[in-house]
Image 1: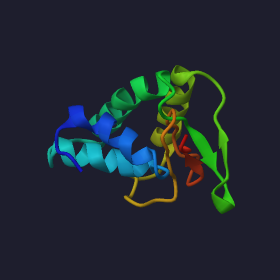
Image 2: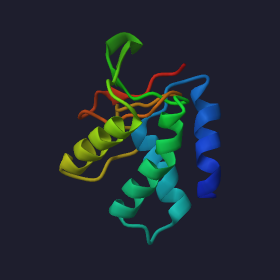
Image 3: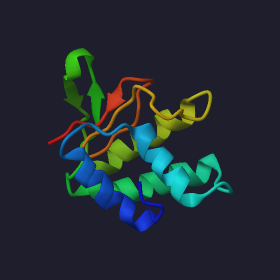
Length: 122
């Protein structure tokens, strides 16, 4: 993955064409691009800032991921989805771990509802 934060949205969009994108994977990309000194708060804020235009343009979509790869899109506009992502992310008892079952795909992004939130591909 790129280490330039400005390139992350394009990389996520390209990767989402063929598969779902885990929110925690996106956060890990941001964490890596920001370097060792980044706080979790900085990583969260930057991840959401980079997701906002993708959700607004409906390039990515936030969803709840179900067994068998099915998903249910989140209701609301990009701002409502980002608020929900932030609320749920802040409620987690610890930092997200790479590879968690929360997944995102190439559509507006969404936050994990524990480990069931995902983003579906288009």
